[in-house]
Length: 103
Image (cartoon, rainbow, N blue to C red; front, top):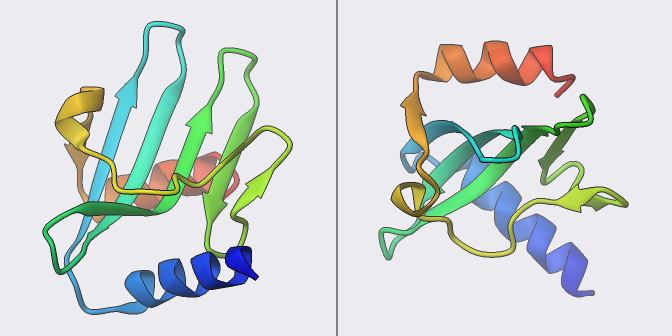
C-alpha cells in the first residue's frame, strides 16, 4: 500500500544519521507552523515531523507515526523553508514547542 511505503520512507529518513533541521513560521491567517526536516541525498528538505496551531486554536501534529487525519497531513514532498518564510530553530526549541502542541 502506498501509505505504508510513505510511512516507511519517512521513518527511514527520520531515523537516519542525515542532518535534521528545525523550522517555524506564522502565516497571514495566524497559523503557527513547525517542521523538522531531514536533508535527503539530493539536498532536499523532507518533513519528518510537522505541527501547526491553527487560528481556531487547535494544535495538530504529524509524523511517520501519524501521517494524516481529517484536519491535515504530513507534507508529501520536500519543502523549501525560504518559500514559506520559515525561520530556523534549535532542536531544543523545536522539541519544547512540539511537546507544547501535544506531539
